[in-house]
Image (cartoon, rainbow, N blue to C red):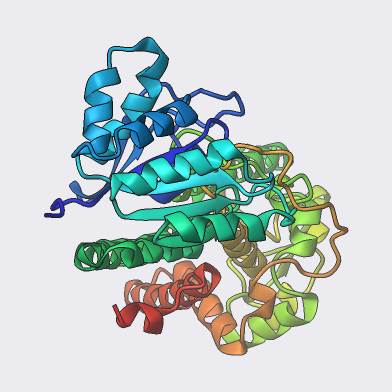
Length: 477
């Protein structure tokens, strides 16, 4: 009889990648992954919970230490009933077989088996002994060839051997597996035993529904970031003659605020996808390495000049410019956006001009006060969206079993042209963004809610596409 909660013992020789496979399957980066053989010395259970309810569990086991001696004993006692149980009962107090008895205990208790090997090396007699021991257990078995390297020279040999001993065989790179590859591996577990099909189908359905909720939550987090940043307002006292000094402080305070809000959003996205211990490390060539307000960021993210011009014309988000160099100061540029009323032309300028100050925010002097905000630059909206989507893509494709931060990064390549997503958005999607910004500027609650829902739907669709989710395939389960 199968357990209510399906249980899988992840087994393999030391340093074969079994802990990395488990970490990725369980979405748990607390699994100890180490290049040191024998790092796992005792069994540890990793439950997968959704809404507080355990739906599946994986067990990390010590590596085989004496497979040939175990197999010799089993061949000598092949007529003994309950062969595995009898071996463990007779050897659990023997220090030489401590790890072997520990890894076989979950199998005795009814766990199915996931056997992991490193496919970048040839098959050894020790491997054949391990396979035969697991075959003799009679438990449902899946073999996973963890391809840690690109070399596939030995792959046919591994597959031939596994077909003799296992119910199913899968190739799986635990260091680079995406969410969809993880789901595919879980689907493979259904094939190793008919009694597992029903409960695993429920598990996979629950995981898929949970992932959909994460995407919805991610879209909500990005909307919250945009709303918080783009509706930023501040009023401070200012004496005559100190305008430039106060404005510089206001701008520095704003940019610091935006950086912190963005990082807080990124942290929430990271934890939403269960990267709790090990930070996802940015590739050195990633545009996310650049500061949010660096000119390089605005050059490679956001819209092109022509798209900005058209977006402003479509949405009417930026309007009106005043020229008041005497009052506002030349250090912020000749033009000062006062909440905006000039039209599309105000969106057509270079990043370095936007970042000079007054074109980023509406800053105006009112009696002895300087009022700042809301944001007048639609380009900041697009840059924030692009950076959020880039970070999301990094997080969802960062396998939980991955620890080789520097060795598995893609090669350096020169950045050319726009690298974000919004420059490839349709005119309709850009119109949604412009209406969202305009609603925030005008303090129109109804318009804000409507535009927020429209932008949420556009972001949700983009996030789904980036995830590679195939809803039609899911609906067949």
